[in-house]
Amino acid sequence: MGPFGAALTVVVATGVAVVTSRWLRVTLDPVALTAPERMPFIGGGQPEVHAWSRFHVRYYAMALLFLAFDMEMVFMYPWAVVFVEEGALALMEMLMFIIILLLGILYAWREGALEWA
Amino acid sequence: MGIARWLTPLAAGADVPVFTAIGAGGRALADEAALLPGVRLVDSPRAANILLFVGAVTPPLLRPLLGIHDQLPTPRATVWWPGRAVGGGLASALPDLVVGPAGDGDHLRSVFAELLSGERRSEPPALPDQEAAEWRGVGPFGQGGTGMTGGVPYGRPLPSRAPDPDGLELDQLPLHVGPLFPPFPPGLILHIELQGDVVRQATVGDNPFAGATEDLDQDGPPLDTALFVGALTSPTPIGDLEVARARHHLRWAARTLRLHGLESEGLRLLGLARSLAPADRAAVESLAQRIARSRSLAWTTRGVGILGTDDVTGGPVARAAGLAVDARLHDPAYQGLGFSPVVHGAGDARDRLRQRLAEAVQALELAERAGSQLRRPGPPLEGPRGPLGTEDPLPSVALLGLLPRLLAGQEWGDAMTIVASLDLDLEEAAVGQPAPIPA
View 1 (cartoon, chains in turn brown, cyan):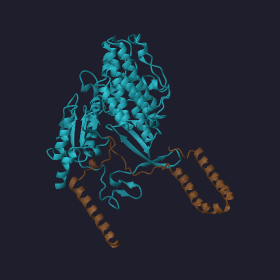
View 2 (cartoon, chains in turn yellow, red):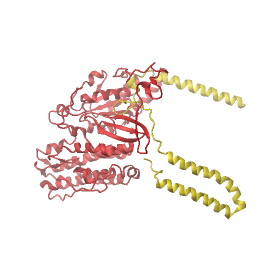
View 3 (cartoon, one colour):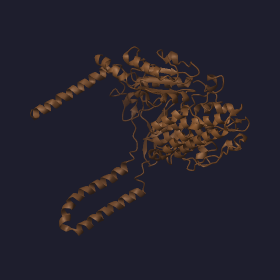
View 4 (spheres, each protein chain N blue to C red):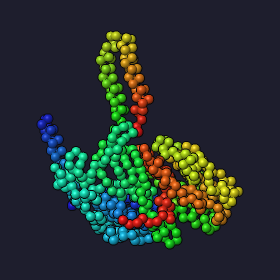
């Protein structure tokens, strides 16, 4: 079976899976839902407003910190190559770079960026 | 339908997924349901096929109950363990309602098997198919919305905005949780303003048991502390009182542990509570130590819902905050039993759990020492939630009053922990409250 055969198998299998699951759902649960049946469960109470609400993403600061260190890793790849030639000097430079970032994290920590609420 | 017929016998062999809704006087019986073999209590009606309603229906409970009934997926059936009174319009709203023998797991399993085999028809929806607001075909795209945030998209308006502590203007979601929300004590309705998962504001809704508690039972309000209320007026053996106190605390702890995901420990506590005797002290003590050692429980409850000594006046909640108050200290019946109250100091949800478990162990010890000694009526009596027979209202009234202040600013999970940690009883809070004027 060549690559075309493999692709055809995947397409056919996906098609069968979609049709079967749809048919299963209609067969096993044929009841049309009424408005009260669609209601979310909040202990018997009724929602007053739409649940589509904009809320504070509180991991925002954490995500920024993560990105900063993620980018630092990107710088480390070329540094690892140069490190063999430059030796201790390259190590010092990278340490300085990391210390500056570390100060940033300490500042963020003090400012409460790592607190969830 | 061939495939459904082939699959249903297989499904009927599984544990029965049951959602329990608890009405007036049904709490103890609902605890028993957790111990039934072959029955699995689920936390949402969406995961259940059987709606088990335990206790009596009061008029304000009927509409929420029917709403939950409709939220069960098909096939569904409703089983009612009425306990005391039959009535309240439930039977007329649900024509296929099964009034079951209370506490019978075999009956629940047979209803489930009939439901799956098709012998019993799935209950039709109880409420009319009516949207909260007309939206189909309304607006430029027919979804009920207009503009960016206007109209009623899919039947409901979008939430309004409110300031956030970080200086942002964010949506605030008003939510009416209860009265049949499993993590809450039965009947508790909280009107919560949510921003994300943070509770900005919480107010306690109308008590659905108000004015109804006396009607349901001629012999007095069906409180879970009925033995203690009775002991105010008639001589009662101290042993009985203390075993009842221990049982109350163990049941509460079992419900709280279930909320925290330690269900198996909770079931063991319930099993012990069912036939509790002073001789079970060692078993209760070792289980209590095991629970106190749980790191996940400590992590979720430490520092949550701290109450200081100024906030509370009596009961286990006050003793967990470090206040050595107990009506038993001034009760002549307890002199000579060597009673001194257990206290903790942090006053958080963790200490309230440890406090009640320690008090359960102590109560069994007192029961053993007291033998058949009688307590004569007269002085105030220390109930499981606080002093009874004093000038003050019953303990649950004061505890309910603490909720709005404790919940403001809490994350959802901590808010649930706080509500559970106070051991509220809405029926107790409703004693003497007049019925609401029907709108």
